[in-house]
Image (cartoon, rainbow, N blue to C red; front, side):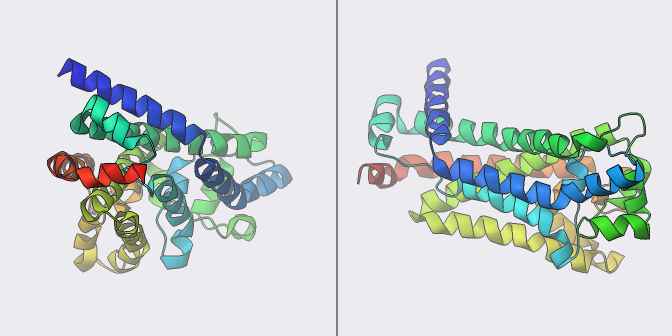
Length: 298
């Protein structure tokens, strides 16, 4: 077991090294930076003009849900991580060699460990870039800052500058920013893990790199639709429970109000259970898909 895990770590390390040289990763991250600048720079414009501050803990704002077009920021950020994972199980010219040397099971373990690592590094990257963007107006002494409080109150002067940003109103009014940031970080990372596993299993099982990616895109695009219908009344609250991407928006959690449809326990258990099911399917299916591994040499 120890040897198997060590072999998996070596495969994960090799995959991380390959990813570092992959232009798709850097293009995806540059795209993410451009998206964040587009949405967060107006906070600085307003803050500088009116001497208003903004918290550095912005993940809850980035992953806030909105109706269809208003929820575009969250959707775009998820599409970036899909672009990073779209070629799972990450076949290459060395795939057959690695699988023979380490064993197919250890090879899959390494790729899964890589998925977990990248899934947590991505929200860390978003947190750092967001902090750098709003650095000129950052405040840690005024909780969320007067800019976001004004946005949550739908202040006209703030909306004039930041109309494209959807504030998680209940989160801003009821939770400390650092606490909300930590919860969103964990939930978004676990949602990334789930998306990566879905892409991995879909591509592995079908032998086509488009199937798993398409399934992940559909899951992400379900989020604004669920928000549109779910917010129309309690009758549709059950929709929130079938959309894992929606779970990463903590304004739907009961910690901001007893009427909200999701509990933190449901969210974290749901992510871990679905991920465990996909991992089990990968390890059961993987050894039978040796032709997929050999495709990396073609």
